Image 1: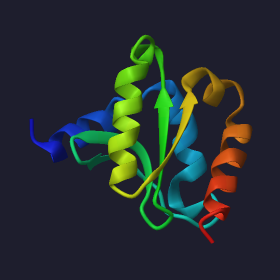
Image 2: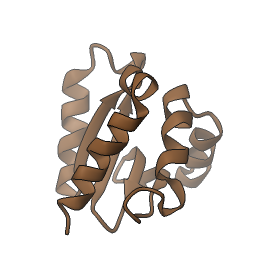
Image 3: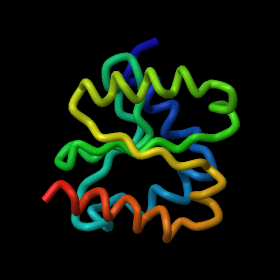
Length: 112
């Protein structure tokens, strides 16, 4: 499938956690940094990407259970592309979006 078409499909079919986090990080609302959603990087799609800070935020839901090796390999590839990767479980985002925003903000401040 075409990467752009796939990214658009992923954006239209967000998880509840992605729906919760997107309004927090979009429009430079978090530390003044711009985030994009479902960005193709190498052979993967990163959930949220801040290009300026070289930061990727991945949200892991039920589809990630039992796939720790795959996620570790994916993180390694994204890191080789020059990004730091933060991972949060969907349940964490839904239960404590402010805490997740604080953690992302702290990671962004490390880039200064």
